[in-house]
Image 1 (cartoon, helix red, strand yellow):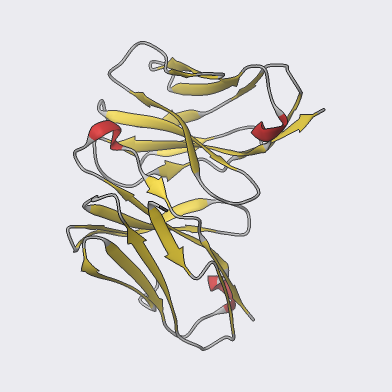
Image 2 (cartoon, chains in turn blue, purple):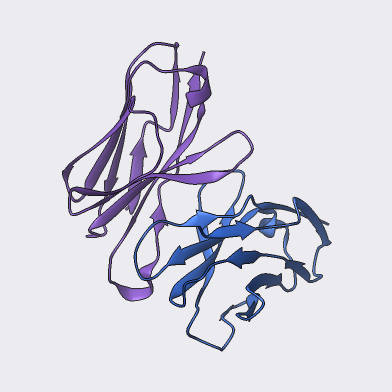
Length: 114
Length: 114
């Protein structure tokens, strides 16, 4: 069975600094997708970034980028120039193939200090 | 123009009652999901429907019964509510196959069973 592990229950970053959230996953599949979702106190689940396993190039969305290490089954999220609005729970998620449900990690609570 | 809308946002009820949560998406997607987020923020799939047909049914008590009258709606009915059912329930939808294969989430329904 596929699993997703986020080893950092909580992280803290100073405003304007950079922080990296860790995620590892376990799968025997070759076709899969990885995602980072953000859940602010409003509890809305917001997609931050996605990565197709077949793509070697790391995904980037403005201040958010990933370090995808397929062999190591690692998918970390880097947030540059952290802003107060980045404070939220961040969930790493895996999906097998092009369909199916998401399998989530337990989340990392990110605090941003002014 | 909410893409995935759930009603109600909050639901407070007594043990033993029966309640329903409604979900509608206006994205034209053909697959819908129900996820449960427990008190520790852990998100887990409950059900998935594709074109009104059940495709994923995780180990969920049969007191939970999803109903999909059409592909734009997926409602969740819960019988004989128990204290342990207190959680946030998220509806999501996606298009399979489709651009980016992204799942879009509703704002969640916080269910409190007293």
